[in-house]
Image (cartoon, rainbow, N blue to C red; front, side, top):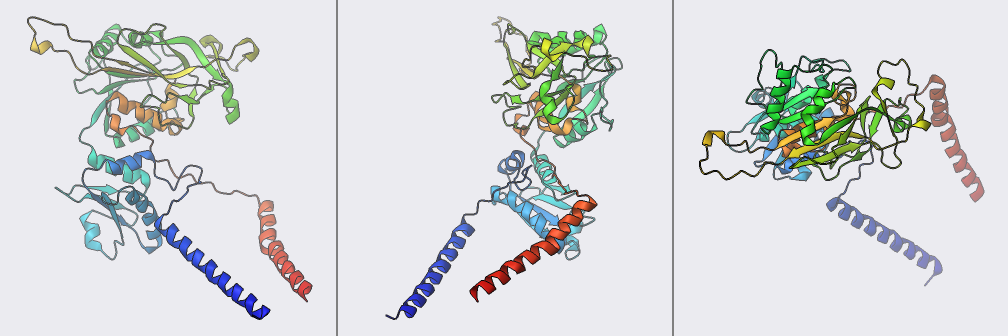
Length: 464
């Protein structure tokens, strides 16, 4: 066979083989797509709570996203992620409200960008969406499945944080998210109403700085003795009398403030303590991976001997290896204009930032004449102590959101709602000065095209 003909046939065969392999790869990849999300905050991956919201559906739902053609692709991309979890339970449709005004009116849609979720069976309950985002969709799915609400009372009158305050020290963000999680949040003054309401699912002491009256202290103690639930957030100024409430459950304080050398890595002052280690066996913290932040935190400790029937779990600690926490006396920090601490004189340690306690119900004693109206409450005591109220305030709440909401749900015995929630989309714009923009423009508009043309001319001249 002619050598040139043989070379030509080999080339043709190679091209056909390459095309066949390419088509085969396309077919395989089309039927076995596995996307990889390499964004910093996983913006193209559903959060565990979102996946859980779909898998736990007992009846199918359909989501209507009301958008125009320009925004259709973005909505479909998000909704497809939900559908991929379970396409039988979750279906969707992107609709232009101008083209289908009757459907928009059915769900009360007023503008593009809104949506609705409809249960396809039974009475056909619906939930409106103010926006087509993962946070909105997941919250609506959980709300449709929720059969109960939980009452959280925040004690007032002792310098506690304000639930309605939107400044850094307030807790308005926490309150808004608790409502989304199915909580009814109300303040409670034990001087105005000298009793803890019977519908209380949990009681919250959000950073008290003044002591309770003896009568108030007794009311809270009696509530806990009757298998109550308590969340205690410390402040540096929180009186020691509050520790007496949680001491029967193995939670104590050292009276020291935590200064953390690890905060220097975040270019923050050492008054911030960084939570880097979580208990993987407790439902509150088992899935949390990101660091948590506390400010002027009180050092917590577990009693050397656990009280009878009590299980204590240290939920969060500072860096254990190497230890970075410096515990200093309260007087050396509070009231001082500057920190005058000599780290060489303090041995670094591992400091506890959050502790959970649970007391099992005592075995009932045999009685020959049981009294029905004196039956013991069958709930368990649950207590969570947090070393700092700032951790749940507006200033640091976004960092500690999952820990905060998981703690509330665990205390309310709503364990199925404990998860890792959708994160806000993180925009990372490239900010450049005028000089940097000029250099980038010169590189892209002039230098790079000239380089490509030059390489092309060089190859042509070399061949000639």
